[in-house]
Every structure is written in C-alpha cells, then in structure tokens.
Image (cartoon, rainbow, N blue to C red; front, side, top):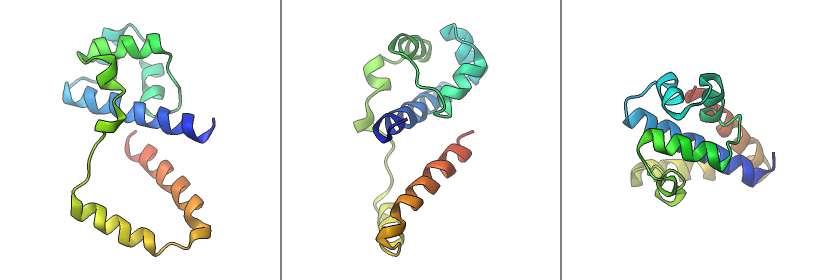
Amino acid sequence: MDEQKKWITLETAARIRHFRRLSALSQEELAFRAGLNPAYLGQVERGLKCPTIDTLYKISNALGVSLSELLNFDNSFEFSDSALDRIKVLLSCVPERKTAQLLKLLENLILLLTM
C-alpha cells in the first residue's frame, strides 16, 4: 500500500472507530447495522482493509453520520497546544535520518492501541 493510501486508510479507520464509540456501539452491533461481516469491520477499524465507497456509505448510515462527515479529515481529532508543544520538543530530538523509522513505529503503536 502506498503511503498516501495507507494514511487515508488509517484516518478512515480512526474516524469510524471514533464515531462508533461516540454511538456506544460494539463492532458487532455496527457490523450488523451496516450489513457487514464483523471480522471485516474489525479489519477496517484497524486499517488493515481499505473499504469501498459503498461499504463506507453503509457504515456512515449505520453510525448516523453523513459520508462527508465520516471522511472529513480536516476535522480530525485535535491535541491541546501543550500536547503539541511536547510532541514537537520530542520530535526535535530525533535525528533526521531516523524520522522514517519513528513514523513507522508511531503508526504501529497507534494500530496496537486502537485494537
């Protein structure tokens, strides 16, 4: 998967999980409402599968949000200014040659934390 597609897939997964949790739904319940296999929905939420527009439409309807709201990455989760400042300080300590490794590590950590 190329980097942009991977980013979009992970952002979409995070948005689905966010709205599912806001709705107090289990993955199984959301899958049932959307007419999807629960195992497949789990893979979508972990960023392992890239869903079609049709599947995203079913998920958004089941969540009670519009497809455009589900895919509105500009309105993604925000950090407080102090958290962003701390992250910037920590990142400034990483040698430039190691940034790709750090990004990969962060992506994997986020996947683990969101399972």
